[in-house]
Amino acid sequence: MAVQRLEHVGIVVNDLPAAIEFVAELGLEPRGNGEVEGDSVDRIIGLDGTRAELAMLRTADGHGEIELVKFHSPPTPDGDQQAPSNAPGIRHLAFLVEDIDAVVAGLRARGAEFVGDLVRYENSYRLCYVRGPEGIIVELAEKLS
Image 1: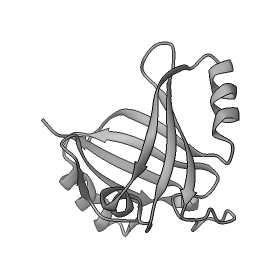
Image 2 (image 1 turned 120 degrees about the horizontal axis):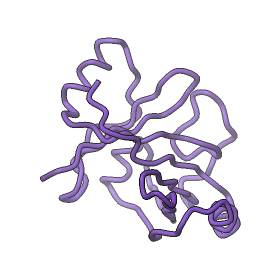
Image 3 (image 1 turned 180 degrees about the vertical axis):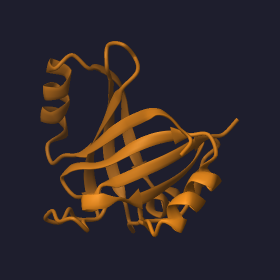
Image 4 (image 1 turned 30 degrees about the vertical axis):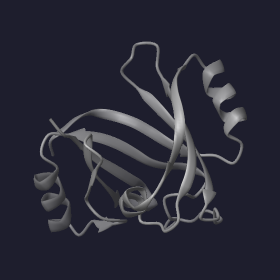
């Protein structure tokens, strides 16, 4: 696999301000926040009608990030191993890869379950979600030049 680094850990929360406060108390530095919605987001994460707020926090060494996400829609279900990408808890780990097509081909050959589609997101990344063992969702990201 061509993983270059762990990009971020995404955690779905019900109370975004409280989660930001908790993570900041651990020493992570706020990096930015925003809202996401639209067709590209829906296609990447395999949901319809997505509308969410998010906050990024970075470790002091600058090498690790946590993405905290509060989904406003669709409604957040109770958790299970086949939970969609907006279920509470740690929902995905993101890895920056060098050749997303090769990584996807290797995972498909091993029977990996894809959550959504491989999508070009704006002019920044090609992204997709893959469900791994125990229902863990892995986001693969290839940075566009």
